[in-house]
Amino acid sequence: MPSDRKVAARAGAILEIDLRAVAANWRRLQRELAPGARMAAVVKADAYGLGVARIGPILARAGCGLFFVATLDEGVALRKVLPKAAIAVLDGALAGSETVFARARLIPVLNDLGQVVRWSKAHPRKPAILHLDTGMARLGLSRTEVDRLAADPALLARVDLAAIMSHLACADEPRHPKNPEQLARFRAALARLPKAPASLASSSGIFLGPAYHFEIVRPGAALFGINPLPGQPNPMQPTVALKAKILQVRDVDAGETVGYGATHRMERPSRIATVAVGYADGWLRSASNRGSAAIAGRRVPVVGRISMDLLTLDVTGIEAGQAKPGAYVDLLDDSYGVDDAADAAGTIGYEMLTLLGRRYARIYRGAR
Ligand SMILES: *Cc1c(COP(=O)(O)O)cnc(C)c1O
Image (cartoon, rainbow, N blue to C red):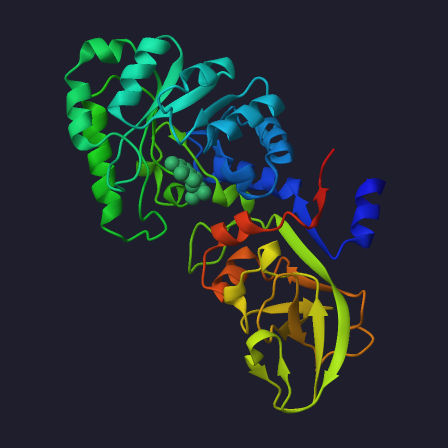
């Protein structure tokens, strides 16, 4: 796309999003890991920051018929992009929102008994998903609410249950005792409720094995290349690359300091490259003096504080011809992904990806 290129040419930083990799991750999860389950896609927070208007249609084309978003507004926005898909809203249906749900044909995830009652009255024939809390104390019906619901067949008869779901607290720790505990609680609750497709596993949950799959799995992170198996090699393809321009390169004497707070002092005469990415672009300030970037394939450390619009790299070991104003550094690429950058910032790939910038020129690759 020529307009993309023109924007990219003048941009300080470019976020490349690989739509083919998203589709490949979808197919891999479905075919190899959860072949017996129906797969839904979680595309909350603008598809984890990648842009749901581009990601939604790619996943629909790959075979996704059920999407989860977090908020009602996200649901309304996705409905415009995907007129036919089933779209469920995880935050649930607060009192008074039932009409908006119906108008946009959105499926509420009913998170408490009051929501079940109100939906049954407002739209007894429109599908809803029932969310049971099995150990997160966050959203979903509590155990006592499940008791009351199970004892009220008249109420249950007035809800069209598209699915019954719960959510795991520790799916990314395969040996955590909480996993089998939640699984047992979920099974016990399902046995007391009307038959409906059940759903427990998100990305990491899929890797806990078929016992956790039930009828519907709900991956988000893994589709977008975040490692669902922390501490192990990432089975998913990376979907983003981030490159930023060097704005200036300067020689710095031994003993001089770099950046705000003078937190890094040069031990020897050095060269510092200043790059057009900062915490306002989602490159977290907690990554100050931590992590690295690559110039022509060679890794260079971040030195000094990350500031709002800039970060600084020690490029002393790089040829002047390669570390020069206008040259690109790779902040995220196939060998250093969101999980690595997140690690340096003391956070997780989810946070890194969802915070990545509103200021980048975005290029979507693999689009038809
Ligand atoms: C975010 C979310 C998911 C998707 O989780 P990933 O770890 O990103 O796969 C699934 N279910 C619920 C309830 C969620 O909030």
